[in-house]
Image: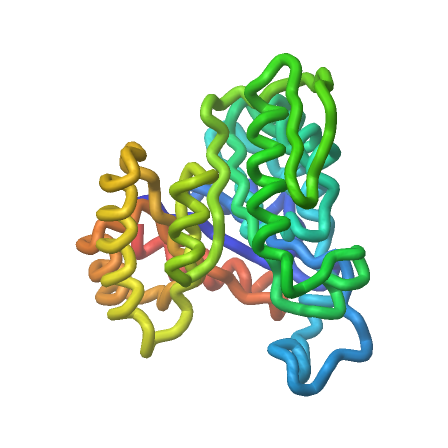
Length: 277
């Protein structure tokens, strides 16, 4: 089981360039950066994002900039979006940027995508929250078409374009696009359109359920005729026993989150997590 590192890159914690170098030197498999374009000041108090929001959500560096910088100072480290909020992005522009970064990095990029959880942030991008999962599914399909077809065309409920040319294509074929979510519907979307599943594992009380879901996902892939698609668990408990349980369940990768408090705290976490390799 591979171990990756994730952070909300901001102007107040360890810099992305230093972090990428440190993560690679310590032997971790990958570095993942999160995305939030902005955080609305006023949010529905009854929504999932209605309470206090940590400062780092408001200060997140653009992940394309961060991962490009990381690619330039590393050689073997894999690089990932964890996650890219695809419902807030134009699929044609995003497909171009992802393919370009895969080229620049020498085929080291992975892209986790999700539908977001802050209704007001989603709405500010012109997306209707209640239809965002269908929208995300179409944008994934459209991007895959752009990555594979010389003359790409797509017509759906939310995304539609006549034949277009778009290069470069990603180095990796198929490109490792992982779909986030912890529901049965999320697993269905992965099997239909993705190349891997990216559930969250940060709730201790739900770990047994996650282990069960991994088995269900494997069965679903077999029934649908998909090859063994990788499972990457985001932010599990960074301790030996929980990680061993996930390893035995067949999880391919865990992505551990490090401190946002300071450069020194981030480096301490890396030292601690290195003992898990």
